[in-house]
Amino acid sequence: MANQLTFDLALPPPTYAREDFVVADGNREALAWIDRWPDWPAPALALNGPTGCGKTHLGRIWAAQSGAVVIEGTDLDGKSVADLTDLAAASPAIVIEEAQRAPERALFHLYNLMRERRGSLLLISPEPPARWSIALPDLASRLRAAPAVAVAPPDDELLGSIILKQLADRQLHAGAGVVQYLVSRMERSAEAARRVVAALDRRALAERREIDRRLAIDVLAEISGAS
Image (cartoon, rainbow, N blue to C red; front, side, top):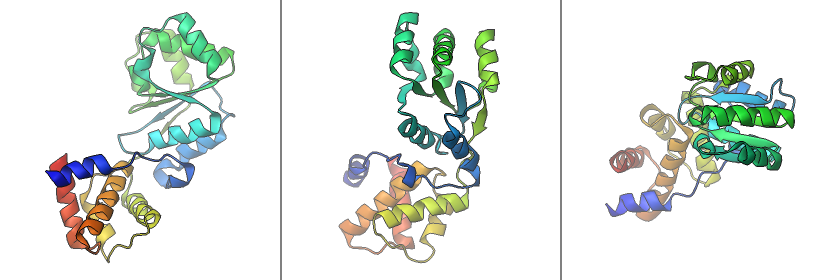
């Protein structure tokens, strides 16, 4: 139990710097759209994909480029038109995480306000707006007119590259076959890769062990038991 508590509490917060984003076929198009800003054909861009695919990282990259504020869809609950007007006036660029959870009328008004001010919205969600259950026809038509780009979950090559980068950033060396072993058995997400490497680093230091396959087995068992 003590090891699990150390694992949970010692993990640093994720970093979303551009240099930490590993480009691969499954996210290349989405990154190109982020870099295309402000030359978007609509006030909004919809970014979608499963948990762990990197869409939040892309959102933070865009926020850094555009100076955007980052909010959750549910943050728009109870907002009046005056509140939304103040938000649009103060924030020419806005990232909305879990955008599918935003109240429809608030999102509709915010979209219109951003369009009037030539601002930009980045809508992040598991599914594209075309698959949302939208009751407000005017909102549905606006969101369907916005470009939507999907981010694929990491494949073996990308997941391996993320692990190798995490190891290199910590100046760690893994024995032969360790990365391939991890890729074949771990959760398929960039966040999981970060957690695995952090746990490898911690246990290798605490137990004075090499980062080999046996340690990888122990770390995956630790993470599985803590989840």
